[in-house]
Structures are given as C-alpha cells and as structure tokens.
Image (cartoon, rainbow, N blue to C red; front, side):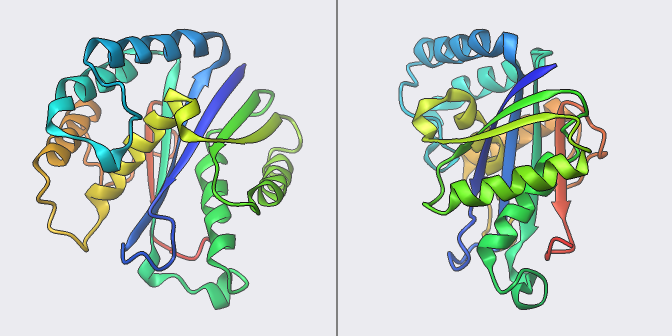
Length: 230
C-alpha cells in the first residue's frame, strides 16, 4: 500500500506560554489523494471558505464548512489521522534530550509516526516547513523509523508550506482542536472552538483529551504523559 502523509505541529515553540504542544498526521491512500484534495477544495468553494484552513483562524461563519469537512473525513475509508500531544511544562531537556527542545520535537514526530507505519508499505511524508535545520533532522528521523521497521518500508520526507496542500491544513485543524481541548492554561471560552471539539467527540464517541487504543485505525490520539520522550 502507498500512502501520502501530511504532518503539522501546533504550539511547538518552547517559550510561547502554552502548556501543550502536539503534532498530527493525515494518512491518505495515494490513489485517493487527488479525489480527497478536489473534494475538500469543492467544500471550500461551496461554503465560501477560500482562506487557508488553520485552527488559529477559525470563525463562527465557517461552522457549516468545518462540520462538512469533519463529516467527509469520517465518511472516507481512505483517510486516517494520528495525533500526539505533550505537556511542555514537565519536560526535562537537560536529562533526556541533550538540552534541546528541538531534539524533543523530532522525538515527538517519531512517536506520532511509528505506530502508524506498517511493514511493506510505502509512505511519502509532507511536513510543514519548520526551520532551516528541518531537512537534516528529517534524515535522522527517517533512519530511526526504518531501523524500527527493519527497513521493510519505503519512506521519504519533504518539507512544504501549508498553503500548498489542503490535507496539511486538515492536519493543522485536527491537531489544533485536540491540543486546545487538552490545554489547562486557558478557560476554553471560544464558542466556535468548543462546538467543533464537541462535534469531533460526537463523531469519534470519545473525549479528545483521552487516549485512544494504540491500534485505533481512524482517529488515533496519544497524549504523551512521560513528557521527555523516552
């Protein structure tokens, strides 16, 4: 099986005053990629949502579009999602991450991908552009993932800008909702964000702030409690 994968992060900066960071990946079967992209663009046209989809920029006027997008994801057999979050306030980078928050970021990516990558499959992973050091770190991430899978998968990474791929924007939307639900440093007073989180919980029949089973195939969530990525 050949997959295109789109990974985006949220609140990953070390000193942004936000207690939760996270990453999320949309997995799409390659043969359905064009179909999925076209349909999401159709939904954007239908609901006059021509702007880039970002969790930080959602508005009340887009509610019907957001619900239609969520419905499409859960009705599509060829799309799946994996999310991981971590509490930044309990990280001990000096002890576990060579003193580097950036190193921990890529450990979090490893934990996001590893359970979802199956042996004998092919994965082309698109990540949102983070910084100039990203390409080097992705080479290391690829090496560790291939070692874990005994080199039985084909795996490639490419950095892109979020406006280039609507599935990358969908990853941003989902991980943004999950991280928002998990945060304890805010009062959660956004009506539109609460509606979207409630709608996602209705679709999944689970609380976004809880872990799913590691083998959950459709909407997989892991809230990493250890904090230091052992």
